Structure formats: C-alpha cells, structure tokens
Length: 257
Image (cartoon, rainbow, N blue to C red; front, side):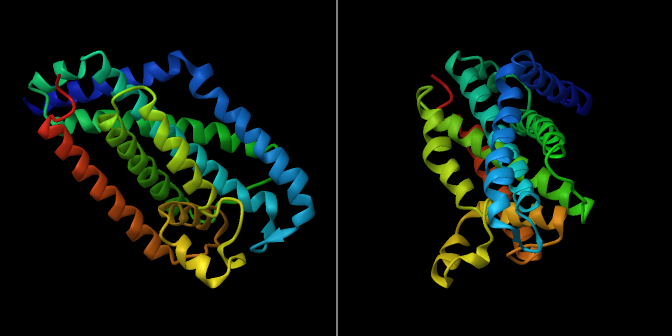
C-alpha cells in the first residue's frame, strides 16, 4: 500500500472507533462523569475534610490527579477491548487481516481510538473536578506525555485482552479482578509515604504507581517516586505491550476461525 492508502486505512479505523463510542455516549462518557462526581463528593468533600492536608495540598487536590488518571486508564482499556473483541466475535477482523492494510496500521488505528476516548473522558472529569477544587498545572509537558503514554499502554492492554478473550465474560475479568485492584492500590487515594517500608516496596511492583505519581507531579509538582524512573517504567511497559500486540496480530492466532 502507498503511504496515502495507509493513511486512509488508518483514519477509517480511527473514525469508526470515535463514531462508535460517541454514538453511545450515555454508556461511554456520561458514566465516568457521574462516577467521578461521586468520588469527588465522598472522598474529597466528606472524607477529605476530616483528613486535612496530604503532601502539602488539600486532600481534594491530592486525589484529583489520581481520579483523572483512573478515568483515562479504564476508558482507554475498555474502548479497545470491547471494540476489537466485537470485531473478532462477528469475524469482521478477518476482513482486516486479509486486506492489504499493514498490521501495524490496524493496531495504531485501534490504539488511537482508545486514546481519543481516554482524552475525551479526561477533559470531562477535569471540568467536573473544577467544581470541587482548583488546579494549577505544574508542568504541561509532563501532563501531556504521561496522559499519552498511559492511554497508549492501557489501550494496548485492552487489545491483548481482546485477542485472548473467548467470550464477552472474558473481557470483564481483567478489568474487575486485575485492573481495579491495581488502580486502588496505585496511590490514587493515599501517599506512599503513609505505608510501612515493606508495603511501600511491594507497591512499586504496581505499574499504576508510576502512572499516578508521574501525573500527580505534572499537576501538583509532588511525587512519591522518581519522575525519571516513572517515565522509564511507563515507556518500557508501553514498548513491551506494543511489541507483543503486534506479534499477536502478525501471528493471527486466536483471530482467525
């Protein structure tokens, strides 16, 4: 395929993904706004007023970056896992695989679709958070890079889940039993400094710790882990996930009936 044809194929997949979640925005965008509003009210206003400051900021300001990142992670992941598994379930993915479209273009199309939903939800959640507190961005560069890397990483994770899933029940197992615990134990609602040394060390095995803390640094200027190390870990996870996802797509295993 020529570069122009590859671009057309890429944009076709991206437009399809965006139209898919916008068409059902009451199921894809609205729930995040409602859920995050409840988090802000319960953990920020009610519980936060009793906790006081954390890391030199009000508890509401402290948890907002983690809650925004939570929305980005879950939406980037769920968009790709549901969309690609749907294509696999109705066998339409086979049409893509036998077409002249390079596999990396197919993968990038789904990834960008997941990123776009993650970014859109992030904007919605950020606007909602401004009704509860004020935010002063410490580093726009860090915020943008972390958001793009994180949404890419979890869009890839959703793709891998979709490839291995055999039923619609399988695409809910990972988010429920793996992703959700990792998010809650990733420092969204607390500082790592509050943990005993042993559990703080164990927490560093959680990739969400680096995601949340790097984003919190971009927003507030504070982090429980080294920013350089956090960037390195997120980048490493993203490269590994992309390489493995492309390998699964190239092999065609579990994709062709």
